[in-house]
Every structure is written in C-alpha cells, then in structure tokens.
Amino acid sequence: VQLVESGGGLVQTGGSLSLSCAASGRTIRTLNVSWFRQAPGKAREFVATETCSARATYYADSTKGRFTISRDNAKNTIYLQMSGLKPEDTAVYYCAVSGQVFHGQNWLRESQYDYWGQGTQVTVSS
Picture 1 (cartoon, one colour):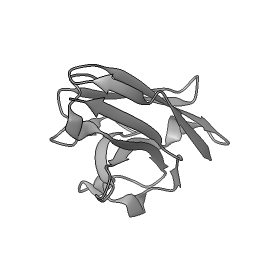
Picture 2: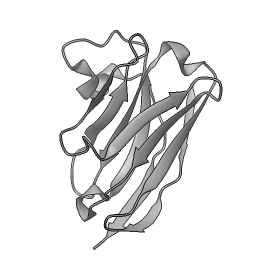
Picture 3: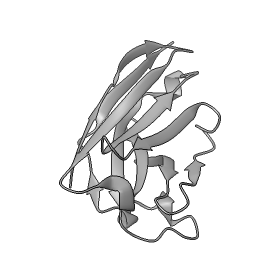
Picture 4: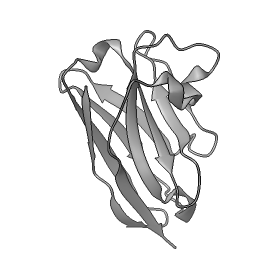
C-alpha cells in the first residue's frame, strides 16, 4: 500500500486546513485509518483514527472537537479536516493504515500500523 498526503501549508491561528491521503495498492475499506503528527524535536503522536469495522472515531484530547477524520472508500482516500488551528498544531502530519484488530486503545501505538505516508507539513502562525 502506498499513501500520499497532501493539503498541508501555512495558516494563521484560528484557520482551517484539510489534509488528504490517497491510498493505492489496496482498498482502505477493510483497514483502520489514522493520522499522526510530529512536531520539531518531539516524538510522533497520535491525532485521530477511524476503525474499519464500526467506523468508530477516536481523537487525541488535544484535537478533539477541532479535527475530524473521515474516509471515502470509493476514492480510496482518507481525510483530516482541521479547524481552530493553534501554533502547537504545527507539525508534519502522517496518515497510516492498519489491518490489525483495534482494541484497548492500541490505535495509539505506531507498531500497530502497517503502512505510512511520507508526511505533509502544517505550519500555524501566531
């Protein structure tokens, strides 16, 4: 599976951005899909996930209420709609997919993911 993110850029505090992640090589219909991010000098962290079975969504506390993860199986694409952006949201954003069964919040763990995109930069100016 190849994942290619797009949609990153520079935005002012309070602004919005929509990220896309186009998948190829396999349908995402049967995969859990997630977004992670990595700020300069920090470890990569979980942002949001949508499970393939129940289409349940889970978010990091820092993004809950501001970010929305979704997918379009027909387009084989994953989305992350971000609003109310803050300077602390500045990071490289990565999409990732997993064929594992998610339980016990293991969607938080990078080791659960099979494929990753190359990342797209999001910069929020103050």
